[in-house]
Image (cartoon, rainbow, N blue to C red; front, top):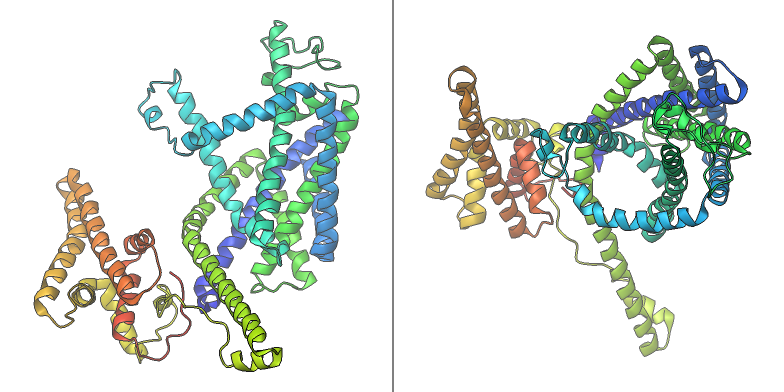
Length: 546
């Protein structure tokens, strides 16, 4: 709605742009280290900051030319070339290695994934936090792995969610939901299974063959080839640096150098497409969603990403990139909350579209029946024209819950609206008790019910900060009671909001009601007050889903 073009929308756009730039620059810096390692192995190019900066600007120049040419020229063609090269590398390794082992590994890995996905999705390392776990001999290492991998990658992916989501939406315009799911979720996951099983399987086979040959230390790191692969030698990968392992796997075969050159080109193109895609989205965000933004502005953001990555490499190298990586993860935290709020909003929007589709289908069916009965399309249209297709609109709130932060429409004068919102912050029980008396007891003016509801809400709300203050200076162990009282207040407010929605047939979910009441109770109280007392006021504006 209109909130998109308010300061709230501008704040979210700015946060999204900053998070995207941080994420792309961090990935660009880390990717440059990988490319530099490959160039050093193949062409003895120095592994230095100067080389890495040169690689950054090569990527930046290509990305700038790509983003300037538009999404359907440079970005699309480079993405297609990078994908075809990655398919070539994966298929080549698939047939060079133990193909039968790879096929079995794919089937087995998919089975393990489906088997363990529910369990791992809810695993939080609770017993590892205590230092011991009944099914783990090294609980400390397990907890460290979860922090360094599971939690880190969850937060990292979330920090990329705004950029990737907007880019996929941009290139998927005109597609159906089924086509979007198949093209953007199912197909990439299938390719990732193939890729990781091929390269991961080859790496695991190399490690096991090396260990079976008796090489378990880093002092000697070569042995004879695997009987199932026509290899030159194998390497104890656990002794290698992270940036070396991929090239060690490719060096298993005679054409390893050729595959490494193709891989470097592929890596370069993937980072170029990441940079130009990010520049395009950030440019769109900073121009109010304009799909065709000025070319100088696109060039500015592409060069900004390259300059930021350069500054990080020159200033601190790996340490600076690690710090920025942590900052981008922190920036991804608010998007995790937004993603949770987007779930019910997306379901509601899709339900509205489904209702409109059903209404249109019903209208077309009536049109066909009318044509058959009256014997003419013109007559059928004249009969149904005054009655266009419609469906039973689900009711929404008069105002979005965030409306008081932007404007004060709906309460006749801004002064009255400001007064109402101030009361909802300081004395929410005053308005909420009246609403509760109205929706629960159908008696808006009953002082008895208003006193009961108001007393309970005031007690739980005001006792919350009071107990916190007491626990800070005197009884330090009673602070949990304060939060119990606040949760009781939020639950009570949730019940009032849920009952109001039911009485007015307003769509919503009780869990979302609880989230709003827990995190932003003044906005909820103001929204309910507007709905009850200003049902006929002007200035309601659009109806929004909350």
